[in-house]
Image 1 (cartoon, protein in one colour):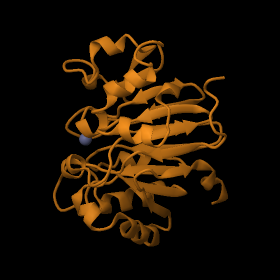
Image 2 (cartoon, protein in one colour):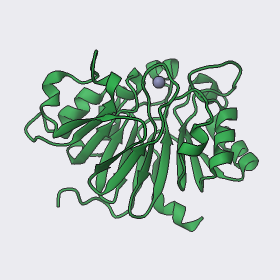
Image 3 (cartoon, protein in one colour):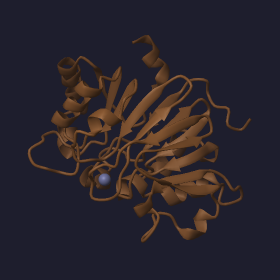
Image 4 (spheres, protein in one colour):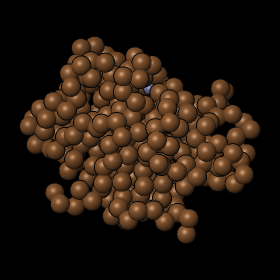
Length: 262
Ligand SMILES: [Zn+2]
């Protein structure tokens, strides 16, 4: 009963900031993605400010069934402890799961050990594995090329499939691992001018052309992206790829039912 949510599947972008300067200055908010899929609520990548952005938007952490951390970098995990505290009502209620790569949980864990006991459990993300939470399932198809262990996800609900490409250097595996009607892609950089641990706009254009989702949403903007006005970049990518490309906005709520009319 408690997990009955609004009937529409939705994704709320708590923030759209990526990389150091945009996050530390809070030019854009940071905080991750809040999914409500078939009544199952899941939080991905609780970066700095997640507790502020989610409470401001009246999203209730004690309804979350899981928190997924794609990798241990601060802009994806800084608020994981406070969000576990909120999900479990300060430990009053043993509740929810934490999913994270091994290197976010082992030597220098992103989660305090006393909070781990508040959870129903912790699951380690590994390449090529499938996981189930409430009414949804997801896979972590391929390990990314990033300075720490990192995975994106492919989510499947009764009605929809969508992918989230977290931080990565470009490699061809991204183009065959993240199918689905919707693609959410972290695009930190405007130019692909030197090898770097993050995706750029030319990388995103190539990936979108290969994967051909119905809609692609750009997010996790670094400074060069922000200065280029992400909505204008998205407009140009729409024309060049033939796919509807949208730039996420802080607080944007995307209803997955929009995919049904395309
Ligand atoms: Zn990162």
